[in-house]
Image 1 (tube, rainbow, N blue to C red):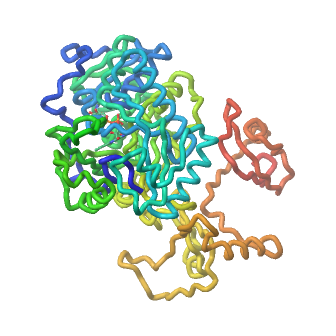
Image 2: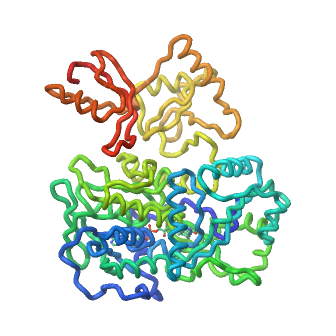
Length: 570
Ligand SMILES: Cc1cc2nc3c(=O)[nH]c(=O)nc-3n(C[C@H](O)[C@H](O)[C@H](O)COP(=O)(O)OP(=O)(O)OC[C@H]3O[C@@H](n4cnc5c(N)ncnc54)[C@H](O)[C@@H]3O)c2cc1C
């Protein structure tokens, strides 16, 4: 897919060197403290506050802003190791789109867009321009993606139109359309200036009582009796009840600044966009990226993309290039934002929140993610469904450095690649396996991965394993499930036969990958507790098994599980 932007698909080169992140922490020389009003550069830190936010990028600024909306401004301190807005927020090309891979993400992005519009209406400069966005399809499958997006847009409340190649040309006369199948026009999308948004939010939070300290790095986050108690910084210590890690691609490092570590599985990758000198008759819209602190230009890497861009936008051939802007951006291993309260429950650290891993769409995310995070801190819940973004979805293995380096090479491509149903990652495989994995593999299993666990997605009866073959890494060859079509999947008949076998004869399932928890009590407490948590009547006879949902205290759905009664109170 080509998008009408001069920024290109991210390359997935880790920018960690010698085990340390490439430092981009100091503010650009020309960048002064946020113009709107001075931050507290020379003042000493307060001894005590309720909330400390680490990171004054667009996400941290938005969390602070939404805390002020809930009346917590005077109880909030925001710290940045450099200048607010001087992290990845500084590199942003400014595209703001509502279409995201899931309804939860769409709702957060829609909230962000509305927030930037409202700020403009209040006279705050965000650089917001609603110019619309045009995605174009060169292949039939890509057009199918757009048709599916169009169908989904009805229930997701996104205004968009499928367009013919000629209609696409009408909308954007700069592009070549002879090889196109069609396109998708999203009129509500736009561009904004991230630095202006960040500045505007910071100016508002300061007015509402938030104390903002720049050049103040968090070094340690303390906890006692399972709760956050304070932070040590380069300028002294602050006692606090809540800590919010909004440290962008540094968030994983900041996660290590507490005992126990808070897992924030993300990795930085290079992300590019190309800046030209002004093109006659064209509104530049995206912000000027001139900066001495970009990562080095990597033309070899960018060349493949540039070739395609020149085909799609021929006028670029005569444009004067200014700079290839290359900045670091944080990706999680599943290409979703990381939001919510840290789940480190053994030796727990409660009241430690994370909002990071913005994966090249931080400006679309920031408004909604900031609101949801503030809601969680103040009210303990959010009106948004954050389930798929919840930081508790990760295990220790996801935070493993080798796993992240391997996986995050593959993740950024998901933004622009053709993602077919039942997508499986190729990297970071064979981490957790059932004891009978070799038998399953030899029986023709083609594997999918759930929480790092390899599980057969289907069995290929024609498969014959050659037992003495090994891959370079010592593993037996294994097969990863694939679909690669929007039509009838290649595995359809295999699964049909398995289904029929289970229905008509016998099926055998390996449940090794399911978490098992033994719950018991001396008296009847275990039954009473489960009756309270579960939606089904789980007071079943001994030896019985029952499927049920489990709810949280607001009645929301937390878990789908099976209970087996192996004793009166167990
Ligand atoms: C080239 C490029 C183009 C992009 N284009 C777009 C786009 O068009 N649209 C879009 O939506 N997104 C885009 N993005 C992504 C977007 O820039 C990011 O997702 C967003 O800026 C992330 O904001 P953040 O607040 O999470 O991180 P940051 O802006 O990096 O903020 C984190 C802050 O934490 C501070 N910090 C770190 N450690 C500490 C510590 N120990 N103590 C105190 N402070 C600390 C840092 O100094 C930094 O200011 C682009 C990114 C790049 C690189």
